[in-house]
Image (cartoon, rainbow, N blue to C red; front, side):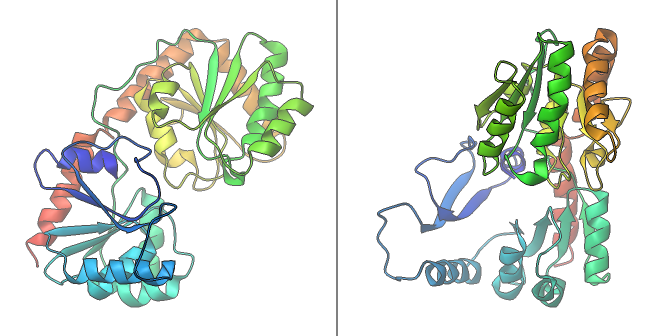
Length: 339
């Protein structure tokens, strides 16, 4: 959303409203043209009139929505979108931006028809939401944008495989580590770098120790410049069981790095062109060995890596901030003309 806001700030007044402020400085860099504000200061030591955190948040959100003056409001999760449908002025175009199906569909089905549109990140999500809302509201698929170009570019010379994202079960880094144990045995000069943190880190570190990979697998921590780190790699691995956001995949493409991923339901295939920018591996029996073979196939074929890298850049161009912002503007202007 920050990438989209930065691109649109060149032609519009754009404000990002954070419900809760938990840090002194945002984790990701924010374009100076974007106005920023928060509704509740949730930092340690902050003083408040209302004692309850939940009540304080709900009152602050209600006040914002009731008094909002804007042409378009985009909310980024169902809890906020329901409140937008209930309280934001009807003369404002109200759009719900969705990446996942709602955990509790009842309020969504009741209040979303008051909105003007739902926007998902891919066609599968668009179909899910269209069925959920039973055609009572227009649903559109617009992918997430990359940051403004120029993008960092891999020189494809480092013997590094990278992976990035939250260290959680859904990302399935355990099967990547097991696959890389096969790679390390056959190509010991290659390294695996894992970017991110999360509740699975302790278990994954234990697995690395169990497999004797301490000289081959490195935990790099979280970074606000994942694309810059991917540009140091020659392959990006995506072992996820599903990829609702897909920003990891798209950022890898923008660096001109080929991707090896599992062909999971609702997985990276939503964002890739297998054979042109990536290699997909079937899940199921022997999946770890198959993933290792796919990695080794690219490691040993420099020409194929270069071909897929070129395809990755072509795929990324369709996700440029300028292209994606243009699609959002077309939708916003069309909805605005009907208000």
